[in-house]
Image (cartoon, rainbow, N blue to C red; front, side):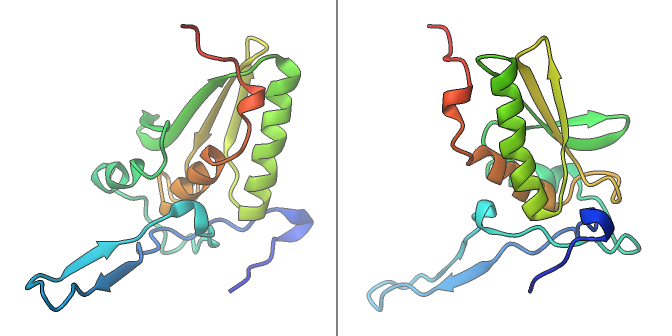
Length: 161
């Protein structure tokens, strides 16, 4: 299902808690066990528009369960609300701007927009939350996973050994 952007290209807010796809996989006939395997590649999901009347932020426990699917990100409490945060050090100011351009392309495609920070000329930080929900929703993790999957290694400084 496709969703359009609002007036002037502004994104419609995002819907929370899309259930993680659960696929039941039966084991071979030799095995007496059956198991349910949770398949959840967030980077392949799409953010969906929010219905702010019914939108609720997820609990910290639920957020922690999804965090492993967004490597490098951490959950922080800011002004009493949960958000995802991640920081990088770019090679230069211009490389930071280039990284933000990559991030903005993903954010626009998803209709879900993070807070971008560039300080000290090459320190970038991204904060993600669903403002209309007052905290984290699955859309935040989808966006974080997609940002994490960007091929931007040439923009970042190599870690010191």
